[in-house]
Image (cartoon, rainbow, N blue to C red; front, side, top):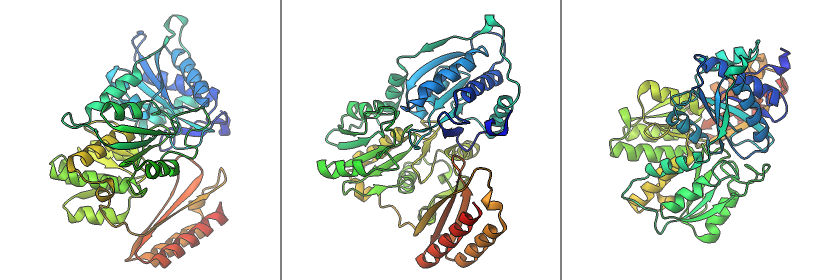
Amino acid sequence: MDGKDRISFGTDGIRGRANTPPMTAEAALRVGMAAGLHFRRNHSDKHRVVIGKDTRRSGYMLENALTAGLTATGMNVLLLGPVPTPAVGLLTRSMRADLGIMISASHNPYFDNGIKLFGPDGYKLSEMTEKKIESICNGNVASIDPEHIGRAKRIDDGLGRYVEFAKTTFPKTLRLNGLRVVVDCANGAAYRAAPEVLWELGGEVLPVAVDPDGHNINFGCGTTDPHQAVAKVLETRADVGICLDGDADRLVVIDQTGSVVDGDQLLALLAERWLVKKRLKKNTLVTTIMSNYGMEQYLNGVGIKVERTAVGDRFVTEAMRRGGFKLGGEPSGHIVMSDYTTTGDGLIAALQFLATMVESEVSAHEMTRIFDPLPQTLINVPFRKGKRPLRDRQVRAAMREGESRLKGNGRLVVRESGTEPVVRIMVESNDESKMRLAANELAAAIADAA
């Protein structure tokens, strides 16, 4: 196979610009066939795959191509339509499927799309399994005999099943009566589920970005651009705002003053509350290298350990499973609660936050000022395809210089994104001048090498 057409998995499945390699119909067909061949155990007609998607127009193209590839290898496909990513994990397990697939590029613009794979246990596939499927994709993918071709059918109540499950995670003794909640669904996968769940639990729901047209997902809305939700909270004097991203696996909260609360503050809040309730297994929170060091200092002070992983909710989840931990997440708003979900779930995380508000009778603003974050700067530096700027000699020298400058009063994290061709630089320090100098010098060196 031509190098430019090779299919490779990143930190969260396969992602790219729609109708451009690797996000073409042909590539999706091959992924479907490869995944089908990997998970097919015998020639029975009992093999099942569930497929969900968000609201991007290109989802139709990829859904059909994946279905063709899977049925060509004898898999029976159950089509859920637009549902949140965590619903695919849930329904893969509850419907006894061999495989779950979510078609989404998460928080990216509409012109991108992606494919995320879940195993029969409802968890995202391990890197080892993805590599095996990747190898099949890029080799000779074989079809099966005509008598073993699979079927495909629509599942009309998939979203309803997820809605009912989400409500069970909210304490039965509580209701959202009297709570005015703005919910921004990013014109994405939760545009029906999130408002419905909040309303059925008694909230006064004020929806934002719930009119998807195939092109407006994440556009001026959602976790990456919550200005509409902020304006709605202030305009309506709402008690709280809930922002989800395009596939609803991330959460950002807006307090009643219009301030945006990131995942670190939410994780600190939940970890401390769960510690008091003796729900925090081994008194440990799992998060990534990108979480603010101020959170770690605060949580250590109240008796909570912080275990860090590589970036990506899959790595958080894997560490939670290895250690038997119950709570983990990322500053971007991925929050994983293993009592309820197998992956990040923005809606269920929001319900846990709202339950805490109702129980404590404390405002969102008071609840979410858990720790003082260490000053932090983030810079994304794009690079051309085929370049590996972090291997450049001058870049590595700039990294050493930055680490030396920050020694004792800060930290530097540099990594290539697993979903797009950018290098992400994060610098934290109590000395803001040193922080910005280290970040800017390193960004310049990377730009020269990119």
